[in-house]
Image (cartoon, rainbow, N blue to C red; front, side):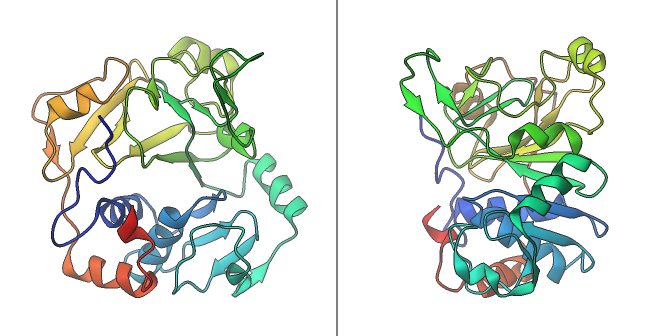
Length: 264
């Protein structure tokens, strides 16, 4: 089952709902960084700045624009339009800041595969010597374990994208669970949440496995289980994700007047 669009309604698309949900996870003191295919976190950061987090800063990887002046939103962070920003940093400086671990509090991440402990794979699927699918490479994902928290998003929620164990560990989540995570002694806070077209997930504090936090409107728990390629932690009484408020939806569409998110 392809999860794309599953939470759409006549009032909003699943992409718009996901951007709103990601924005709600941001704080006023955050400094966020994102990768290339990042229309969702672009809008999420713009929405958060316009509502509850006016002091949030964000860097669009690729162009390295700081606090880009969105509207219209562009599909890729490599779009030259994102140079319309408060300032632009050299790419090498952004990489160094990612590696320091004391600057970025949020890293938006995704992958060809995401596993039960929040590890991400953007490199290859299948046998490493003869993969069935190649991705762009690790890009900035090795730095995930150096930021305050990781917000994972994926427009695909299927058993192929959400797997028990990634075929290539390009971006560390909680590794193999509590023992390996503690043994690694990594400075970051690890994955905090995962947002897909079906649901929002977080991580069980005891096992560090992905846990269902809320199902989006029109989606039920069984749909999420069927679309997930591992045994998801499901607590009693899973809540429904709050739909976008009129204020949130108005601001999302101001930031995205060309409707990039409406096709997601």
